[in-house]
Amino acid sequence: MEVHGEVIANNAVIGAILVGGSSRRMGVPKPRVVLKSGLTMVEHVALALGMFVERIVLVGRSEMAPSFPLQVDLLPDTERGAGPLAAIETLLASGIGQRYLIAACDQPLLRSQVLIPLLEMPDDAIGVLATDEGERLDPFPSIWPAAALDAVREYRAAGGRSVRDFLVTQSTVTRSVPSNLAACVNDFNTMEELLAWGLVAEKDGASAQTLTVAGEQSDGALCV
Image (cartoon, rainbow, N blue to C red; front, side):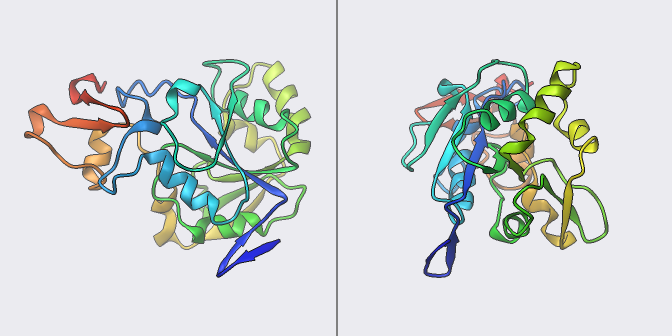
């Protein structure tokens, strides 16, 4: 472990961001959507993970990722369009590390308070989060050991695709976070959701909203 000011960077854990989805409901590549902050959604996620890891990889399609100012690596999907569990299999099989702190590219509200409990879990555990009222949160962020690869392969070979359903079959370790922090793991699938949370600006009225995308602009009419 290396300490940088008040931030602890864990050399043994690799940060991973899943960027391979189709973004059909958003209408534009979600990783490239620019928020009010001036940063893309995936940049927000990378900054949150980067507080705790020395290396970050984007797992998925290279064309989905923005021109990235941070030091990250790209790990292409071995099975394009096969879903996040297939991307996790690609990651675990990569040999890049022994533990992976995984988040989705559409979770720009991630905060250190929800990541620290995952990093404190046993090295050999798949770690997930729940609220202090016992409600299981989104499968991401979560922490995965490389040793989970065989279980993921077996599950997918039997036809399984869902990360959430896969986790039910495993002896995961769950840590609770205060219910008031549950929103920190929210994922955003549509422009309307981003607008409702005040994460993007409304432009030219409700009938002509636009999303700013890294390198371009896209008409909000693309959202489905």
